[in-house]
Length: 306
Image 1 (cartoon, rainbow, N blue to C red):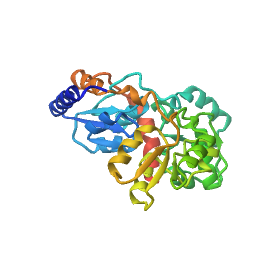
Image 2 (tube, helix red, strand yellow):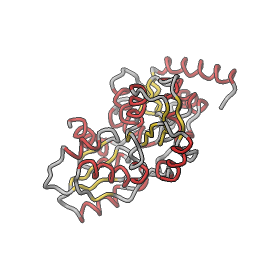
Image 3 (cartoon, rainbow, N blue to C red):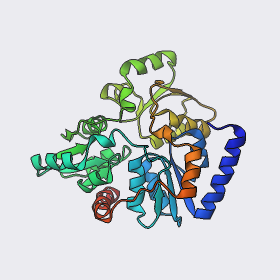
């Protein structure tokens, strides 16, 4: 992290360039604190893209990972979308590609294909409907009961939603390698250290971890729960970046990370220096080709209609 003087200087330059470029800066909740603090909107990936689409900005600077910037491009094709670090990817999104998915669809020709938003634009283009961690249960419940379901790519979220809805699903063998690192033993150790704390976990965690939680929610859902809860202490089972907004929204409450392994290296690749450079150069750009975008946006629109 830059020193205070450089931080102040960079922040000032970013604000100036943002106005000059008519840009909007988006930050995912897992980003570095200083990156979250200079953003116009902080939140979950799809919600951020929707917020940016509703603005009159010409440029979207997405402080997140590649599939998130693609979603912004899908929803705002007329805007320039910039990802400050072109190498900020998502291992889970990479666990399914359109070729492998097309082969699986041939094996299950009658299946409704549901994709988590943590997928590439090409994969979304091959799917029938998308979902987020917050609305996955609602999306699955909306589907015809006489149709098989193929869920990609997160086996943990898929297992969680199948249990909640009672629907049988074929679940892709993918996972978030950050959330999947959290074990039941980690959570039990955290509970022993903080016996009065409520346990909040993300549904991308393993089933045995989810089973130990008091609350299972998306990142935004965790923040909302903590704000509204009368509890004073919480064990948090998601990426460490969420601690910053939790402390901001609930300064009088205590939050303990369930494990020091909950760090996403891709989310931490974005720095203020890279945001500054992205605003100067309007690079690296993320642009979804029209033929992919038109198919992918249908997948998102069907979800939004539920």
